[in-house]
Every structure is written in C-alpha cells, then in structure tokens.
Length: 290
Image (cartoon, rainbow, N blue to C red; front, top):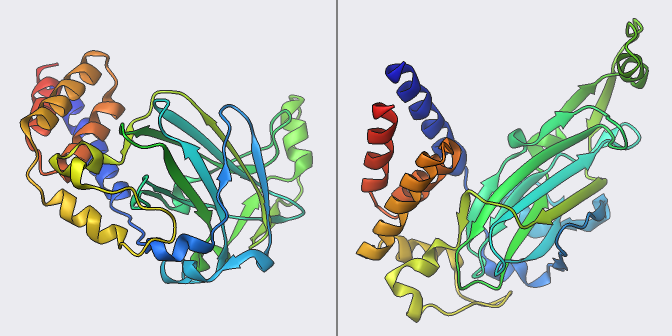
C-alpha cells in the first residue's frame, strides 16, 4: 500500500512539473497595446472574439496572430479560482490557451489547450471547453493578468461532439438515435466566459515578491522597457532566505495533514523553482510513512 501511494504521488509530481514547464515568453513592451478588462469577483464576464482582433505579438509563441482576451484581476484579496470556458457556436469553437502574468508582467503560469477539457451541453450550459485555474497571488501585488489566445496548431484541428439529439435522448433516459456526430471547426472567432472567485489556490503567482530582493524590485507598468523574463531569471538565482524555506516546509506539512496532496505537490514544485530541496524531502517522508 505504501509503495502504491508513493508511486502515485511521484507520478502526479512528475506530471505537474511537466505541465508547469510549458512556458511562454512575452516581452512586457509588447503588452502596451493590450486593452485589459477589469474583473469583478463572482461575475461571469463574456468576451466575443473574431479574426479582426488578431494581435501580432502572439505570433512568437502561438505560431499565428491570434485574437486575445486580456483581463486584469485583483491580487490583494487572497487565493483565486478562475473558471474559463469557450462555448461552441454555430459549428465553430475558439480553443483557448491561457497565460497568467504576475504584477510585473512576468509569465508566471502557462495553460496549453490540452488543459481545457470538452464538456457536453448540460442544463443552461452549452457544449464547451473548460479549465479551472487555482492561483495564490503572493502578497505585495495589486493585480495579476490573464491572457487567453489560440494557436496555429489548434486552428489546424477539429473536434467531434455529440449530436444534440443524442444529448437530449440521454438526458431523457432514452436510447440515443443512430445519427452522425458533429464535426466542429476550430476558429479565431468565439465567445470566452471567465468567472473569478476568492477560493483556495494552489499555484503561486509572483514568488519573486517573497525573495530577499523584494525591496529592490520596482513594479513595472504595461509598456515599460524592462525585460520581465530577465528580471525573473535574476530573482530565481538569488539565494533564498531561511524564512522562505520555513514557509514552504510548513505549508507542505499543513497540506499533507489536511490530505490535500494536490496542494502539497504544487508547493513542492514552486519551492524547487527557487532551489529549495527540503519541501520535497518532507513530502516524500510523509507519503512514505502513510
């Protein structure tokens, strides 16, 4: 039993690390023309997209000029859960990819289209692709930023969805009719719905702010000339103080006591980005002892 639990935990940790390493690099200078929409908590925000909204700066990481949805989200009110869905409209769908930027416009987390899962029509909700982002903004940030776009690779694909008659029959408890399903084209047009709520997050955003270099950092406005990726790299190479290590050790221990393995794995992953080894040791020790 112990070996099975340990193997499962290690596999989850490896999978988490792979998804976290799927990075996107954006120079903050390119964001000067982006119109950021402010988000209110617990309200659905709908944004329509079309090809005439293509943004040239996406070509370097998306392989094409994609329409972009851009949100500015309050980051000083605790942990966040961000629900995103893109509905299928008239046989077309915008396949989302998402990037979260910290207060300094450094890319902090990337969510490729593979993390957006198809969900069938149910109740008032249409056929859609959805993802839930669980984030914890580190203190000292007023806002974090969310970019949603599509890629050339996604545009070259289609998705097969159940015919509405089959969905209706299943909902009524009847045998679905023998009719073909519907092939949906991936498109530059569509509708994105985002809902942000104050709930427990497991992905830390803005870790640079808890490093010893915090006092020397300067918040960078959109369009500034500072290269955010260079600033992020410098911070990661700075030795981490004992208070930060103790913070992660305690947080991992607390998550494990609460049997929240996913949160513990996220904490271990974020700690290792800072060069910390003790959180992983604590995680493995606790899992192996159960």
